[in-house]
Length: 310
Ligand code: SF4
Image (tube, rainbow, N blue to C red; front, side, top):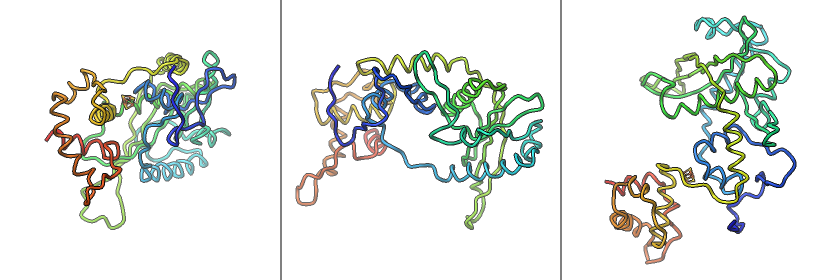
C-alpha cells in the first residue's frame, strides 16, 4: 500500500490498526459516514484525514438540551409529558441508572461486536417506556421550515438509520425495544413580525417504525473496509469530491477526471478549466502581482460551482 506521509493535517489518534487486539471504538455517526462513502471513511479512520469540519449547530443543541431538561422533570414525576399525551402515546419517560451515560456523546450505548472487534456506540436523546414495558427510542430534532415536515425527504433517511442503530444498540443490552420510535420535531416559526429575542416553535411528535436488520451487515462491511490495504473508490455524485478533483485537475492537468465527474458538470473539462481560470486568477493575484496562498480548496465549493455554471 502507498505510504502517506504524516503532516499537520493528518490525525494520528484513534486510527484503526488491523493488528491491534483492543476493540476499536466506532461511533454510529462514523458508521453513517461509511454508508455515505467508504473512501472518506477510510481516509478518516485509517489514514487520519478528516473531512473538513462544519460549524456546530449550537441552536439545535440548545433545543435538545432544553427538551432533555423538560422531559427529565416528567421522568422524575413518572408521568407523561403533555406532548406525549396530546399525541396519544401511552408511555412515560424511561428511568434507568445508565441513562445519563447512554446520553453522553463519547460514551453512549455501547456494544462490543465480537466478530469484528468493533465497539459500536451512540448517544440517545431520550427513551420512553410504554404500557407494554417496551422501550421507545426518541430523537429530538430542531428545524425552521414553512414546509410540512416529512421523514420521507432524502436527507432524513440518515435520521431513520440513526434511530435504528439506537434500537439495535439497546436490544444488545438485552432490553425490550419496540420497533416504534419517535422524532420530537421542533419547528421555529419565521412568520412573526418581530424577532424580539425570541423564537416560537411548533412541536410535532412523529412516530417511525424502525427496521434494524441492516445494522449487523453494515458493521461487517465497515470492518472489511477498515482492514483493506487500498483506498476504496470515490462515491459518484458527491459534490465535494467533484469539486476537489476538478480543483486538482486545474492545478495539475495530468490528473484525469472520471467520466461521471465530467457528466456531473455536463461540461467538457476544457470549458470547466476556462471558466474556472477566469474566476480564480483574480483571486490568486494580490494587488501588486503577488501570488496569494489562496488555492481552490480555500474557496467555498458551492461559490465556485455557482460561478462555474452561470
Ligand atoms: S466522494 Fe470524495 S469527498 Fe465525497 S465523501 Fe467520498 S471521498 Fe469524501
